[in-house]
Image 1 (cartoon, protein in one colour):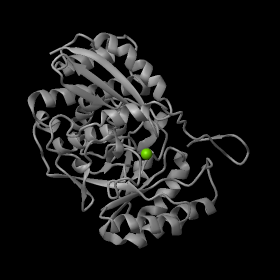
Image 2: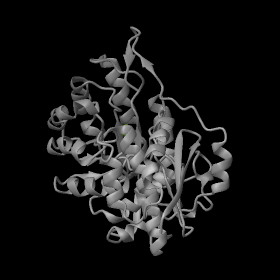
Image 3: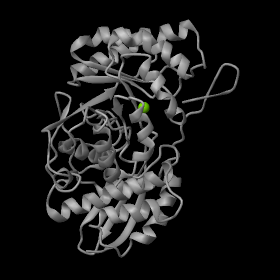
Image 4: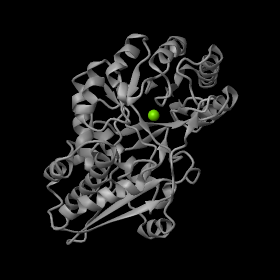
Length: 381
Ligand SMILES: [Mg+2]
């Protein structure tokens, strides 16, 4: 079998899909994207495609080596994401070629269903609590909150009260039989994060995510030691090597993104490395259906899986963009907040190519928001 063509599709709201076609008629889909930099990744995919055309798609690890390292310069969000999407598509082809879902090629299922969570959102305690209540009523066993607006280096006690109050309101709304996670999105300084962690500790969050920016991963141990709250990070780490300092610092939850950290191939290895530190995986996935399918395949195959992020509104199909790119949404059907083991070959989903071609005509120009502090200076999003 040989690869004959590689096409990419810029899809609303902020995604990029890639399709690898073979001379045997088997096609694989991947999702290579950096949110806000989709066209940059698309250019990288085009450069990497030059090598892949004519190759045997089943030599996945060898292709990963060449794509990741063969350009001499390596690493980083753009290249690792381009490789990630191509890698997902190669696994999709391998599974379809062998008539098996990808997790069977990774050693077989270690679980029957995959626990997922949804974002509660909300700008106030009341709004977040209402949203969270609706989500648990829809079956989710866990919800996540993002941080409130721009956050000062050492923001005010009032700011901390608003943030902690929102977590408390959600905890009260969902009770102690459901989980609640808090994502600080790298907006906090380490000293401000330490103050917050102490205050949310009695609310027993599942984890607090990105208490420091990825460039301060070397300091994340200070956040770990400040609290009993499990610390999570990893959506902006792109390899085993990037994860190693976080793991040695004592994080509890590693969050590689299967569309950013070298795909299924590298994330499987990140999972194995994390296991040696007694760290669980909660893969990052605010992305589309192909990225989610890749995450689910990995979750089915690794022992140290915790929970899966998703933003596709699985509890109410059509409530969020993404599922319209599938011929059949039933592989993602949610039961008690979980997706049942995917049984279809490859990634286990079927892309609606006509819908993809139609929707890619307009592309998108998604850019991450730029936040400002009250004094006009740049603030982390
Ligand atoms: Mg996050």
